[in-house]
Amino acid sequence: MFYKADASGYQEVLPGIRLKTLVHGEKTLFAEFRMEAGSKLPLHSHPHEQTGFLVTGRIRLTIGEKTHDVSPGDSWCIPGDMEHCAEILERSHAIEVFSPVREDYLPG
Figure 1 (cartoon, rainbow, N blue to C red):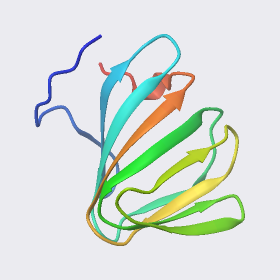
Figure 2: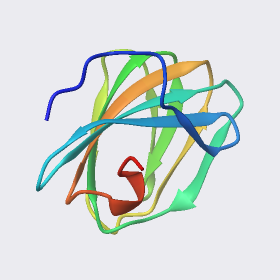
Figure 3: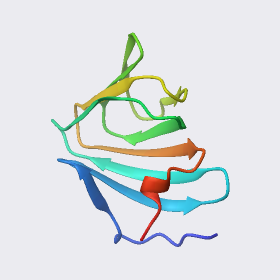
Figure 4: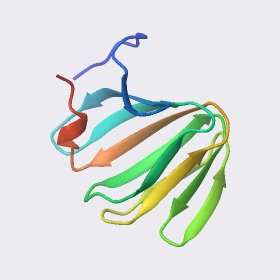
């Protein structure tokens, strides 16, 4: 699978948080998130391991019992079934990989 960058195809998954699946294979899914300042990702968990990288902005990310102030260039890995949440402090852009593939993030 190959993805050629374009500005279409984002879906709002929560107020102020937009998602676009870029590519996926049999075992991983690569997604882009655009997040507005003040938006929140509520506490949740899922069976997928989630590895991310903050491209721009600032977020406060809580993974389990630890809270991290995340700046551009920082990255994280959240084990499957681990509770996590985020507060978006500035307009932010992140990319994340999920394994196994998140069926709910597949296009179409």
